[in-house]
Picture (tube, rainbow, N blue to C red):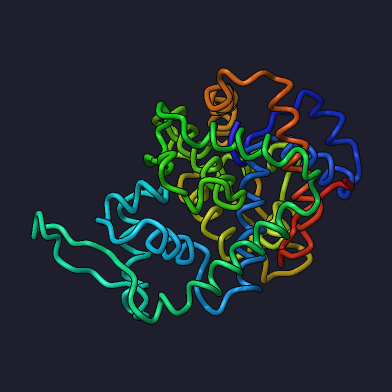
Length: 329
């Protein structure tokens, strides 16, 4: 099960509770799923790094550290080292070149390709960038037992490096080269999230749903109705992101909005019959998606992983502008 996937077996019981209790009960299901926890940790990593950096984004810092550690490389090699697709790689490199922190030069062996390398300005920044990245790892994992950290890193690396995953290829550094990202929990959690998200898309062909869209359908089926701001506060996303999710579902007739009786400027959204049918069809596929990602891992190991991820989320959600409805650790 991916970022927003959850399965309720006691829907009637939840619907009889008060709104506040219902919200907590709904989110308790999400907070028990590795995909959702990984997505929340990705938000947390971005927030922590933003408070540490000198202006570079976390993705930019990772690219710069890879280039610093491994030397000039082609765009495709950089994409594989960072575990992202070619279009994302191009976007990050473009921004780095605009800021004067990376440059493209012709590849000596094949002038149709370009090599990406650091500039003198970015080399002068690498000490601070590396220190900020190390501090991110320290703060992120501070809630965990240090003795269990190697086990967590190894498990996340195994999930992220699965060669059968439909996620963009990730090629960890070889044993002969010290990979700057391969032991970083911030990177490994995001890589594992990529695997969960990609597997969800591969497991739900034809449904044309994102994990967050599925999550909203799931929430509305249980909760009855919700405003855009209510969704943001409950699920832990900024309202502009929620607007995109809502628009996509409304355009397909899977949810419908009506003016709020309390505030005419707001709209209250509810799930349609078609939305319920799509949600029900997707549920079995979503459950299968999570099993595909964790195939080969003992159930006890996955439960242990979830507890580690929960500890990080509970400790750091206060850093987010929209932390979502959470439960005590």
